[in-house]
Length: 198
Image (cartoon, rainbow, N blue to C red):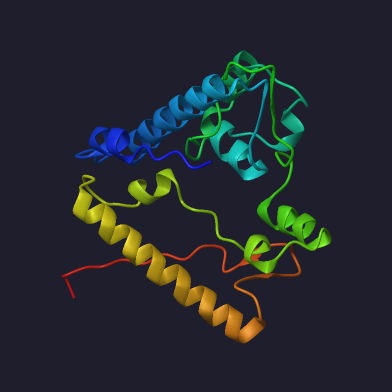
């Protein structure tokens, strides 16, 4: 199921300059949409793809600080205790949905570890090596206010950089990325910038 909320969401983010506020607006739209689908589909459980770096960046903690099951109140308390370790908020955390439970089957794993599981189950390379869509990061990467023009431009730049890297790695290594001996993805991240100041 794909839920298209562009018409409702984009006017809320247009003109916003602060990256963390952009993430918050995206998170609100994301949680409102998931809540609506839960109600319409009468869901008892929710499963999502939260991974360990999401938790570490948002809560400023390591996996050893976490319990197997935590209430939203416990999550917020843990986050408040570790505020100095905060990197950035995540749109899929700190939310309580009206379901019996939220299942996060890969929450203790990193991206390379998830890829290894997909490889073990012989999933297609397009799935194993798929780059995560940046979600709120697409607007957060825009320096300055979000407009329809610079959002389209950022998406175009993102697609060019990602496809160029994928093509290079596929030609050189037979897949769009490699996992090195330390279990780290290469390239870890790639960035592009445009300027008229050259």
